[in-house]
Image (cartoon, rainbow, N blue to C red; front, side, top):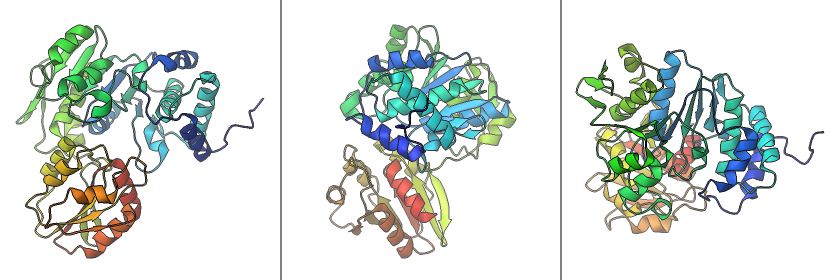
Length: 410
């Protein structure tokens, strides 16, 4: 018998799930294990790669997906958050999950949870895994939401665990040193399974963490690397490294290495084919009304630093549409733009955690040109109207800022 009290639309389900748990985040796996067991989603018969990291997760997963598909693999990909529609989070071999597929998965989770309270992320993660279990996939790629050890994604047993990088972010949850954060992120590692670390700069405790977990360490700079014209993997196989990789040579090296460990071996032609791949909101350029516009979701200091290194020089003024979460290093990020010809367009994304424009204003130097706006959309319109042909409009600070701005710019 159909439960007529359940929502009949994706929007209805998402509203229900958002209202289900009082906390947006509740780290811990105890509540999940029973639900996951009833859904049979903790173990897969095909290879699983789980990816954690402060920065680089989305780019590495984008590259892995493209490379694996070039080898004929049927890939399922779980990522978060989304920019425009929830369906972006759940990618099946045939494409993004449909509203109907997601609604069916949500109904399965609702039945299996048997009254157990789940957060939005936990509920939706379980739904994605249920869809993956029923799919034709022969490779599952999973992105950790926050941290690793206690994240909902970590209920799944991976064949390869990847930590792309470790930086200071989400310190209230993960700790205030790189070593403490590394311990949380490397918690996705498993005994006798590879643990890939994609950053050349290791936290001081990285080797001991792998030893404690019993994982097989595969570390950038020691076991594999991208340098000059060569990408060298842990089995000493060499691939030709393109001069430019839009999503980062380090992320490409990590992607190739992780795939090799599950038997997906890429060649020079594959690497060359993905070098120009981009990703929405990652140093993404659009030309709007004759103006060069750049969008980047980076929301911590290392991410914004990397974005600025990739951003082309600007002969005119940079019109900066800026919105950030209140728990992020607002002042330090603003300081990265010292010495540039800038005009600031301050706005708070439509989410409770967003920093109010008054907080953003406090971080500006006394000589800064700025204006505060009621919405990111209004700030984006104003920046586009004010920018000239040699200027840049730069939208950055959070996923939510970029999402609202891209919707306005389309």
